[in-house]
Image: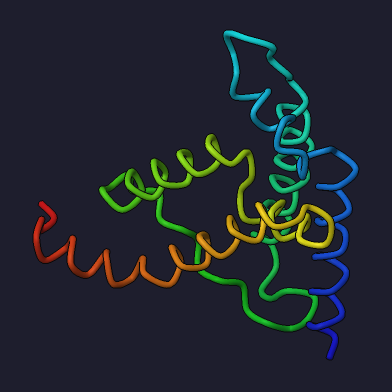
Length: 145
């Protein structure tokens, strides 16, 4: 039960932060990417505001055996730069640049953004669903080093 409460509180805080910072506004995000036009640096402050507390949380978590809920911490992600990371980054960046949203803000905006966002979220979920299938076939067609 406590895990669900922490998840609800964390998700609510994250969603509220996205709304307050304007990251659910596609023009703000695309303004960040428009470095040769009407550039908007807001996203840099949002990223910094997220990365600094997270870096501190990682330092604290490294000294603990388990989370406050008693659950074990997940293993650290790989730092290897490989084909999966590059292809995933390109797909994420293309979707982010074209739509002006990534998964978190798109879910946060579902309640007010309207039909174009519903299409985006449906496409995003479809992409997540077919990604394992594509990865399997890509690995067969192009074996890793």
